[in-house]
Image (cartoon, rainbow, N blue to C red; front, side):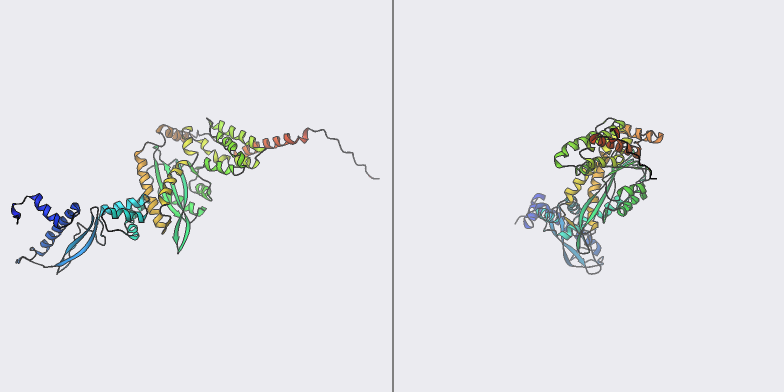
Amino acid sequence: MTDVDRMDLPAVLGNVLEETDPDVLRSMVREMAHMLMEAEADGLCGAPKGIPSPDRVNYRNGYRERRWDTRAGTIKLAIPKLRKGTYFPGWLLERRKRSERALVAVVAEAYVHGVSTRKVDDVIKTLGIEGISKSQVSDLAKSLDEMVASFRNRRLDEHAYPYIWMDALVMKARECGCVVNVACVVAVGVTEHGHREVLGVDVITREDGAGWTAFLRELKARGVSGVQLVTSDAHCGLKDAIASTFVGARWQRCRTHFTRNVLTRVPKSAQGAVATLVRSIFEQGSAEEVWAQHRRVVEQLTDNFPKAADMLIDAAEEVLAFTAFPEEHWRRIWSNNPQERLNRELRRRTDVVGIFPNRDAIIRLVGAILIEQHDEWQVARRYLTIGSLEKLSRNAAEGALPQPPDSHTARRSQAGSRATKSRAKRGNPSTQTRTPAPKRQRSA
């Protein structure tokens, strides 16, 4: 038999590993944990295990097994027990948790990136861990709650937000034993320094005035100020909520969604031509040219598509609100496309879940995704340049922003041109020769 005292360290380690687990890393982690726990238990007893000593104050009482899920795999620990009192290695394990903190972070990160709970179980098994249930994945993901709550409740009074984009996503959640549709509302803003930020996220029952008003009031209570323009779709009640909450701010109706609404008023065969005409309004170089092109497009659509022309007239002030701001910002603020790109990322990760167990689960997942995007925006280049923002602030202070034409005057002029073209098409009765009617003779 080989003398252990004459063996070098690699040989001793090799013998130990051959007698335990073929996985070297897992065996080393287990042996090191056991050695440290044994040393700590001996220190609490005042003497090593099985050795009489006058300094002994306690005795050992066997072991209790505990499963420990780590990145090296599942390890079965033997935690020493004491006759008097209890011993728990708080430096190694967390009470009522059998997973390593790093493993918790991995599972939570996989959940945030849209990996389903069943797939997480398969991934965990490939790491040598015995498995993790769906409920355990959900419990581990709850560690994100504090982070998301802190992000949602942070103060927003350090910056001014001249531009804000808002949108809502319909998701499915379980409530009172039924699957219902709820609306997840998200607000994104640009600071006076040109960086984008995620301002808030919430889940409301439906997209109505009460839900939007409560969401906007919460943003204002947290310090959102300096709002000059809010871009969004024509959600029910959102326009009134913006007007009542951000007094003095204008509302920009998303040009992309508005164009789709206009195309519903024309036949399918003519939608391509009408869409080209509507897009030409936004391709002009100045505010005056934009409004002039808007009037020309209305005149061209009046004869064949009067309903589409009426929509353009009624929504002129809402769709062309961007013309009151610097031209450098037009492509950024005249539509909700920046928000739509963020929505696609949210959809990609939330569609994996399908039906959420409750509203808190929606906020947990969506909030974690928004935190990730918010951090990326802070290190990315500015969304708007400093020079253009200084121009916006200077023009706002001087009141030099171009004002759109009076809506009533514009409607009267456009309606008058429509009436003139209509009379010219069917023949103006005012230009025709009229035969005077014979006078009635008075009876005697």
